[in-house]
Image (tube, rainbow, N blue to C red):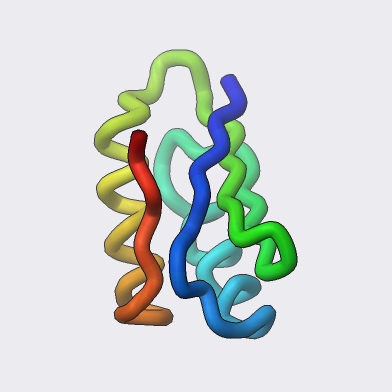
Length: 74
C-alpha cells in the first residue's frame, strides 16, 4: 500500500535524501520517497506491516537527521 504524509520544516534536499535512505531500510518499507520540493514523504509499505509502527520509526529517522522537521499526521 502507498501512504503519503506532509512534512513541516524540512530545510534542505540533502537532509531529505538522508531521511529517504534511512527510512527505506526500515522493516516493512518497500520504497521511500522524501521530497524537499513538495515537503512530502511517500512510503510503499508491505500489506502485512503495521503502518503506525512504521510511521513512528520513520519519525525517529527524520528527527535524527533534522530535529525541527515534523510529520503532519491528520
